[in-house]
Image 1 (cartoon, rainbow, N blue to C red):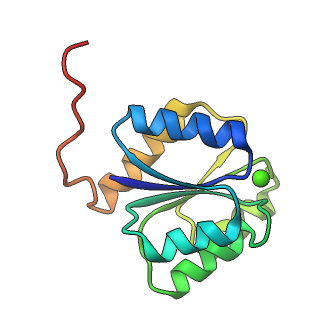
Image 2 (tube, helix red, strand yellow):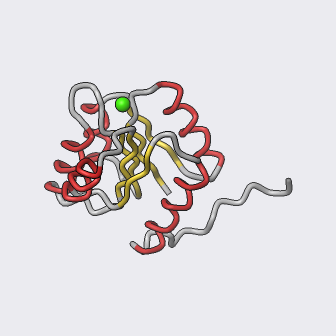
Length: 132
Ligand code: CA
């Protein structure tokens, strides 16, 4: 499973990347919108986690653009903007789910798995880490 993470907060992006890698995901991480949009369109992404407030191109525009270009993988918005209007706007732009910061990694991972299951992308064998 290949995950795109677009997040401009360095600490959060690195934590998220480590956490996702530990869960068996391959992670493409972008710190700003332009790079994020490039990855979103050019890489074989299975699921994306997109922050809304980003330099250059904001998360909402990334989501609109990738949907316009026919990308249909699940997108989860990750943001500190908790007004209901932002949720509506995000979902209307083409996002599938919405996680507020601060969040628990377990919840985000569970939401990702749910979306991947529902969209039939969870076809590959789960990553196994060997004996613990
Ligand atoms: Ca941000």
